[in-house]
Length: 429
Image 1: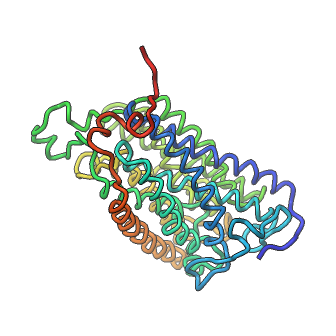
Image 2: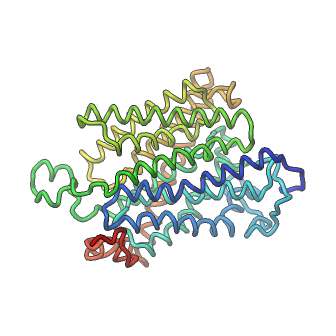
Image 3: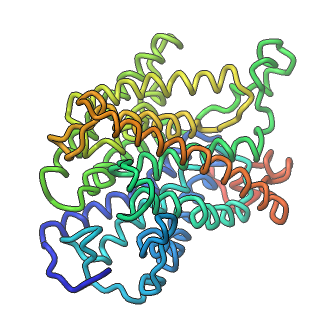
């Protein structure tokens, strides 16, 4: 319930900045993803992220916020007519149970940025072959039917997973596990890109070299590094902003975020060096993002040492999964969203139950003797993983019936920039 209570000017100032930082992350994701695809799909990949931000902003305002943070119905979903289209939300109202020192309108704006970037993460799994119209339909329905319930279960004060004891500081479960498992479903339903060689075909040399998966090289590595750097920058708002106040918890979350990202960047680089013989620039950028993913649920609950461990482990684990996917599976998760966000989010959410320290966030994990917290984290991911995967799989199948998900083979050959948008990234004569 919103009430008129004086807000804290320092907390308000910090949350305005944090909200702007998280907003930056969605176009940054566009450059990160755009640099990884082929030139003929660069524009389409960036604009998909951009337009998802715009569309989900409207969805969140009209009904998403109400369903997540409205009065809970048995811990399953929220409902509050006064929150629909923000009809009863003003700058002078505060919701004590959610954010007692900032206005409800600012809390709405901060949470909007999470709701917007989460579905944008999914597009990396089906990049270079999904129809723009079908993508937009999927994003609206996915946000309403998948993201909203999960966010309510975990973040609403009366959500049933929250009542079970699950903790998620800034979205390891709500954002990354949900998006990562949904991305895996999208890769399976949409299917492999033309010319994508499944591993056994590569080994048997049953196809021409021109059709081999090595064709799918990043078009602009500086874009990848730029996007990763801006994501790292924006993630300080993502995680430290989730303290919802300008306080020591925000400081702790900021520091743990930085160190986990650094740890994963280094461990991914080392893995590439060992496996591939050279430290990949793209790998360093991806590793940093994986570290940011992994620390997200734990940022406000773990100390500095634990954050470094979480980051180092995340880089190794996600690198192994990404290499397995590329070398031994038939799955064409174009930009390894599952390996980075799904696996990174799962590790981070479970690691929160391992390393949480009461001296940081008031909750202890397994290594401090609290088995219950560890079990609560396992239970939360055990619920969200199948819900996100099978829910997204079914949703995509239904959408495909009335709005085909995949572009035509001719459109895929031409590239989505021209076939879907009539534009090209570069005009080089």
